[in-house]
Image (cartoon, rainbow, N blue to C red):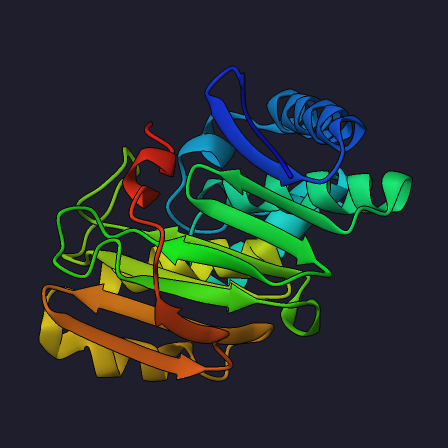
Length: 239
């Protein structure tokens, strides 16, 4: 397996793939889709905390971002990292048909694998850090695994949540819903209510929420296991 960390402007991308040429295609697609977004977006689109109306002839990636934004009730830019990862993976799959391809963009993952792969959950200084991971197989991918935190990263958050992870077949939905979930969680007592709010959302598969020493799960979540990779923290994207 090949692991690469690449950067384009403020997009820091981690790629796990089985061939170098796959990585090249992923990077090319990241540049293409970022350029499309930059050329389309105005100040309102970039800064709004709720979905904004888009043009009928908007590019496909803008329409995809809007699907997740409307389902989650967040601005389109809350979905951008996950959607870029999804577009990059799907383009590389179409071109190269790799056995394994995982793209992580600022904590948001789109994964495709024909082999068993573990994806670790990192919750900062939380005591649960380095202890949990998802077991992914061909049967539960392709899938988007997006995360949001009130204590890590540079993204705006109105909650108090160590980690909210949402899984969906659509990255825009996973990314938008994890942002909304992290905003809604103000403490351990909110975990159950927020998990129940997620259920029934279109394209939603499952979720994990971690606050302090509490963890809640709901939906179709891949097998959650003890993480044996004690070097996980060194693999986390630092923004």
